[in-house]
Amino acid sequence: MPQPKELISAAAIAARIAALAKEIDARLPPGPLTAVGVLRGAFVFMADLVRAIPREMSCDFLGVRSYGDATVSSGVVEITSDLAAPIAGRHVLLIEDIVDTGLTLRYLMDLLVARGPASLHTCVLLSKPSPRGISAPIDFVGFEAPDAFVVGYGLDAAQLYRNLPYIGVVEPSK
Ligand code: IMP
Ligand code: MG
Image 1 (spheres, rainbow, N blue to C red):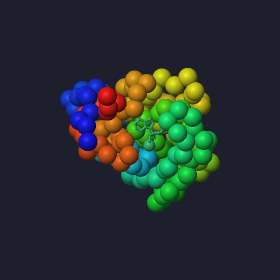
Image 2: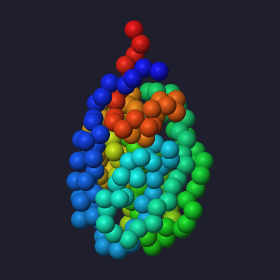
Image 3: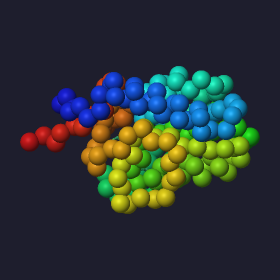
Image 4: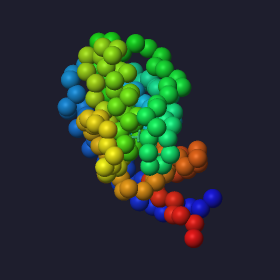
């Protein structure tokens, strides 16, 4: 298993999350929050982000699987695990690891809006410069990602590397 090349250090991630949390807390309507993490990729990011947002909140999770190859989305997103509690009337922050085409985020936003939250905001750790983009408004972005497959800090390649403390790129074997 090759060691990924570091792209964003653990210290840079921590600094960005501290700033992001302040921005989120300042911009979201006042009141209790439901933080919704998209499994599995967002679990590390969410754990750090929610601890930096000083307000009353509950944490819930959506399990998602998207089909499609590396470049073209099939247009199908499957929910493998639903929220544990209703979000009607709640302020919701949807937390995702990375947005590429926007298909997953768009699908999840439509799903959540239909349940009548008081507000819905989206936060992603990484955003790729995707020309294939499906429109999915993102309220808060951690970092712009390169147009390469990134791993670590929750993100995987074939389920590996989620436990890396930094974000890196697996270089293609020569
Ligand atoms: P989208 O639906 O095309 O926006 O793809 C988003 C999903 O694809 C994310 O939730 C990730 O699970 C996965 N994904 C996209 N790019 C990467 C990457 O560079 N590394 C790891 N996972 C990725
Ligand atoms: Mg994901």
